Length: 79
Image (cartoon, rainbow, N blue to C red; front, side, top):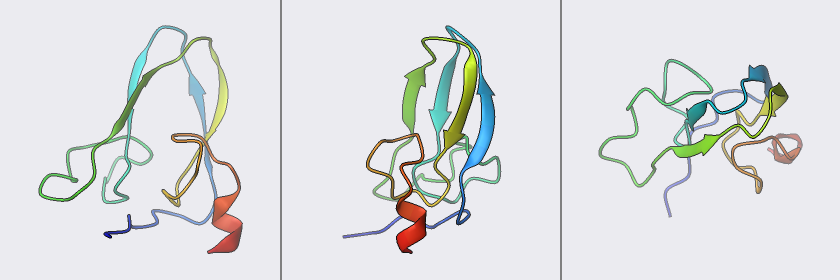
């Protein structure tokens, strides 16, 4: 099983905008972290596309191994 690359070992805080659609990088290869830039092409990964239900700050997973994609669940502490 192919594992994603860890883009960082801590979450990235970002401000989500209500109603906006986002594509979270799941492979760890994007140069626009935490967002997808298409670098996953040719891999087993695809971005997690979601719409923000409300405007709020969010901790986006950067280790790419969270169980609550795309949000940090603390998994990076075990890497």
